[in-house]
Image (cartoon, rainbow, N blue to C red; front, side):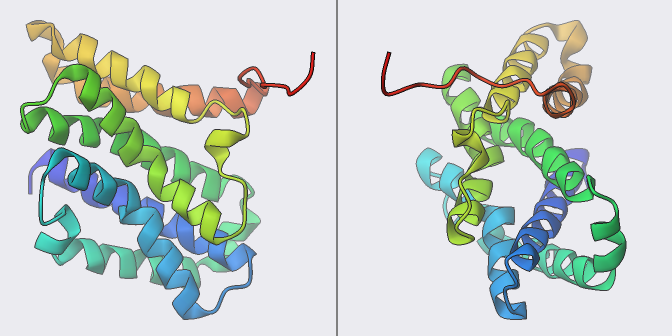
Length: 203
């Protein structure tokens, strides 16, 4: 198993756990929670693959993705009380997920021969769209609309990836460095309450 594939499965797992946790907070039944775990885990990657013309989409070609989503659901159900006792655990899962999927989405887009700018957009789509669908289905305002440093952390990590990948001596560190940057920015933003300017409807 190569590193990129392993990280993709890891991102799928942590997003599935995050989705299951959000569904549980809304008191969904088991099937409803599984649906939310599924769309959280593969929603962004599905949209990315459709947009870049990579079909059938990734999870349809590899049953391991569905198995990992099921495992994420089971992990949440088994360790639910322990996860809920740790206030920031679901935040941690979500943050790890967006960090991994930003870079993996960019790599897949670049492999299709598309430009760095498009790869940057697709990395963000990969990272945040599953969460948008999750929040919408759970009747929660999506994080990317709340002024939080969320999608912008993905953009910063994506720019870091493009920069490091353009330097032959630094390519080895592009993936890890970009993942760490997204994770760090998102964590620091929550810790220190960094937000984006709000657009108001009056002067």
